[in-house]
Length: 522
Image (cartoon, rainbow, N blue to C red; front, side, top):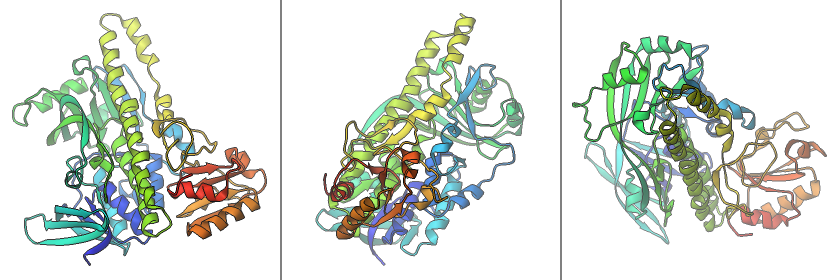
């Protein structure tokens, strides 16, 4: 088969997640992936509770849990230290367990190659997905009124073939071929830093860090690095590690002593075996638009940033959930074509906020702290400021991507990564799981389409009739009087296929609610 509904160029975690989202909905998908096997470089390790919900929806959350088991007692929390990794100055950082109650699943930690293996195995079980391993996109054209054509070539420079589809999605990384081919520009916020990525083995470092139980990643703040982190993370618990840090301009694998760099960062000599050295440019980049005609971009093709806080892979998975149901809706006729424009309207501002309000703010605030406070100069003042800046729980609670004010939601404000966690249902926000009077949980009643929870049977009947007229898939969940208000503070709420609240009871016409939620306007 060379004719598909959707062609995805790039079968990393985001591309494969999008393929699963579409394939489960009966959409015929081609995935083009140049690597036959996941690449064994540890990155994208910190998966949020929301990402685990995606895997549950994709039918492989249990596989994710078993793909990279941690030994008993091994935690996945984070920590920030001052000066060196073994410093006496430290505090907890980005421990996502603080928001566990607001999601259906617990968070997870495993290297990206293990995550990719889970997704590849799941995709192989879905008949609607065809994966071209060992191939790359090399030529592209689109007819905005008809479809797209992608020429692919075997990675060894061998055979070529042509695929056609209704739409194409670039999930092919920060140097995306498909983004460039579609003429989508990007805006860079260059931090002018060359970064090193080291992968090494050291059981001795594991022993040294037993003084900090329950931790899996560590940020080291040092005045010499002007707010940029030296960042350690566990890979195989007790054995292997990765390390990111700035290096001087002109650094190469041959002219820099990376083992000495690790020794200084840790704070003492320790035995290690260096397995991998990579160099990359620290930058923040975002596509000027996430759509160019019949082409969309997602994951690193749409946005990229330094690996500060594990936001990248999680943001990419949310791209896939947001775009996937919208593409399926348009292809299956129950979503208006304008629904596809809401992908950019919702997801791009969320990334801009993630970069501005979290990642770049970390750098700016850490730089200001290091310039102002020095324990060698004023120990008491430093310690007061150091321990006063431990806002771990506040930071985690504040990262709450939402779509307030989007074309599908309405209202004031705009989509942002900055918000707050609450069980009260709010339009544009993720639905938290709550117990219902019949003994089930709300999350377990969510369908593949829209879901209406309603205490009033008449409300459910009216919205059900509107959905049937428009051909919109809608599951109606009746809730005993008072049960929904106790759980969510409203008598009725409509949930989108990606589990964001589309509407809460406000007296609006049932048909108008669904028209707006499916791209037909308010």
